[in-house]
Length: 611
Image (tube, rainbow, N blue to C red; front, side, top):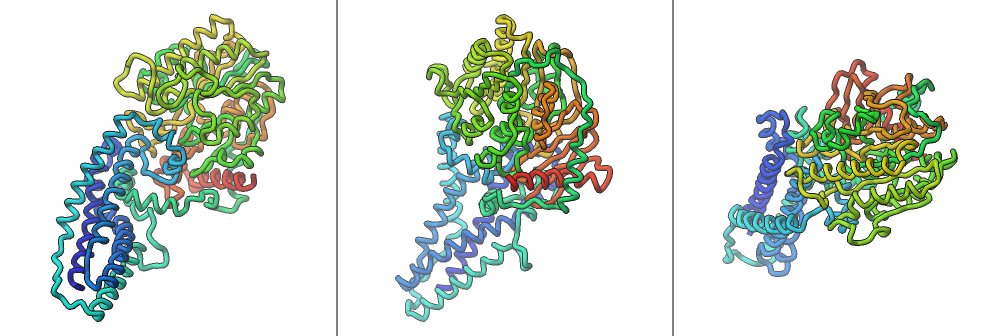
């Protein structure tokens, strides 16, 4: 009885290593567009490096499967593999579904599934809204076929012939049970992946200077389990130096001179901020991107283009915090989750209201309850909130909400009915997955096509604004909520990954057809705007006036839940807080340069904790 068990157990272990190797190959081929300049040798070497994390997760599987044998042996007093095989087959289907999902997710996000992605399962309607029905059907069909083939492979690899003529006495029963317990307990070795004090962690997969090669080596399931183990991100501490030193570096970076050029021709213009869903720099021709936005391109002659703005983070809820509160979020969570903390933030709408602005309106064509948006915008001081419930159902798309053309028209109506000076904040929606737009296709790629649709809506909006005499006294600020890899799949560790458009236009500008190349973050919109309105803004600690002559021109941003970056005109840093290692550091001039991103994050962390 013991020999068949050892054969079965060992072969099952080897099957799972083969299972993960097959996934690694599928992942690598399906997302090869992210490989960039990763050498083939390093991609192949990822199969060897990845064995450690594969073995660790396989150890957990084998513990579960091994323990399932004990009640069978003790009750029936013979070795049977029914439960053992059943558990493995169920796990094959479940884990195959997860890994296929990870392959698809990576193609969109350029990163493996993590606890942040799993958080979306709390709102399954939102997840479904991002998918076409045929994508779900295709996924189920592929999952069924692949699972069937893998189960066949499992049977082939783990086939063991039992000798039912062996003695079935208690001596053999207990000896077999003891061997099962001993062998199962030995799985602590591959699970820990180390004989030292510190157990294995994701860092063991980082063997290359090429990000994609490292990601190929990572076991996505192990990575998710490790991430969820540390799911309470609010308890993760970010301390890299004495707080005094961190504050000194931060203060040097954010010290303002108070000297800056005015770009407005009126003291109190109407202000309309348009937050553009998923608009990345690579869709704007004037930012070196594709010619996807002809109306925005035409508008540039009447605008100020800020050409080196980076998104504060990688999600819409985080971009909302950055633009409305001028506040930097943390790597793995947004302060918008905690209304008791957001209530202590300074807010752009509140500040404008204190200085004579009327009819503060927030507009969004989707569900205002998503990601605590409702509580956040009301805390921010908006007097009127317009969302999906304020539009007829026939104006809505199949998934997310009201198409942009209708919300832009409503924005014009709100402007006409408002007392000057007024403030409006409009968050667009149509360029969100699944890119469902009511327009004849002009681009083969769905993302580009949705961007072109919103651009068309912007063109119609600007025309309407001018025709109805709403242009001359108004400043329009267009800025994206976050960047996306796009069809060209810009890698996360690229200096331009988080680059987003921000341009100001309208009759209230005294300067037009101008490009400002100063580096800045999405958080900097607040203080830059308030400074132009001659409104004091020192309480916006993490926002700086991009036009100030003395302040450092840099951008700090969250690339992914564990990744932070710091960029300016001379250098770029990408630091992974999970493995405490620089993934990329370009043109750092001194040891002090390497501390800037860490110091900034430490100050952000301390501020979050104090609220």
